[in-house]
Length: 83
Image 1 (tube, rainbow, N blue to C red):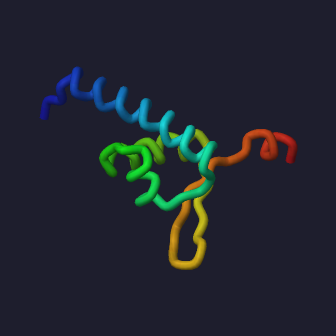
Image 2: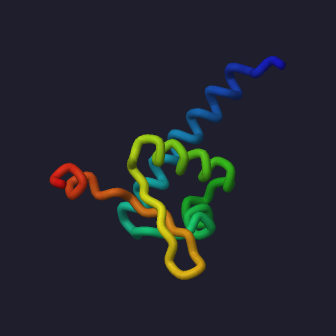
């Protein structure tokens, strides 16, 4: 199976840009569900999920449950480095 380098590069670019949007949204608005995050960022759900994965891999996010909802929040780098 051959993968177009241009398609791969475009997808990686989109995921990176979306990661920035996700980070900015969470920094401003606080923790949200993936459904709300997808709606607010205005990108396809699969790209948002990949962006969330990217940020999670960089230890930028935390995940928790609130009632029946699963939420995503931004780790406060200042408080985590002081601990």
